[in-house]
Image (cartoon, rainbow, N blue to C red; front, side):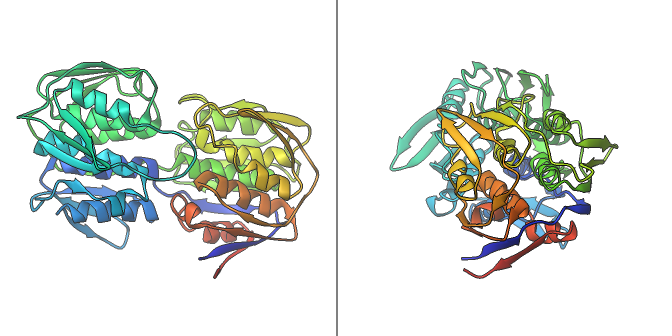
Length: 420
């Protein structure tokens, strides 16, 4: 099993390109199940999760062609299998996203309960209740969700009692082919949800309220294939910005957008970063300074994203002052704190809040990644630590960051992948 070996101390300096968003590409690939005719999805990141989703579509009979730029063409014409098997679904939670479109298009879906990072409880009951409200029959049998509908799904008015990104995505895809009007209240507003809705519109769906907490979908009989470019990855963007800030460095990130990362940019400016933005780039300059501690609390978009919490925890560990980080989305998402403390950080946990007293220097140590974003925090810690840090179990990081060591090397980091 590969590991990352990081020699700390170098300030990040340079330019890199940001990849397409994994959390947008996955639901958009699931949405190809709705299309009659070929779909062309561009700007997909080359990541294990994307590869798993493509394998899942293939095992259900979808014809897939991939070019050298990771532009994927899908064709559902040969599809005859409506089961998403445990062997593939167990590794990736986003597999649940084939449930809504498969049911809406073909009238049946059998999807194993999903896996993914062990960051806390993420029940799928809202997905299932929403589909039942649209007239589906849903049962759980031997670890599989088995959903059926006679004819088309029916439009429904459905209130989600918890904001759920995956639930919103599943239900908006199902509603796109339902008969009549569906209103989804308390819908997730994340940019990735917006990106999915824009893709569905390009396929012929009728959706209003995109980007708000109330989505109204007027179902259509068929959706057609189209060409769609996946949005840039805001979490990858934020991770490299935080890494540069922690090292006192300077970076320019291309092929990305500032409007999808406003809460993160505000906190980085609070930490002392000078940030400038264009239509498709963001630049950060710390001018060699140590960052200042910031206080933050995660919450659904447009508030501070839970997927950026671990990276800021690592930056706060070497910042001036005392900062608090409160996690409100997932109960196990401060798990990286114990590994950071092994590197000399001064972090006290109290419930779902980390109280971080910044230290001037972290010390290298062998550390173990526990989930995707915790992996990123340990890489950031390694970049600023004295000595050589070895990050184990980096298969987590490969699920969400395309070529992380190559990109950091382009920014001047001393990092390489070594065999386990």
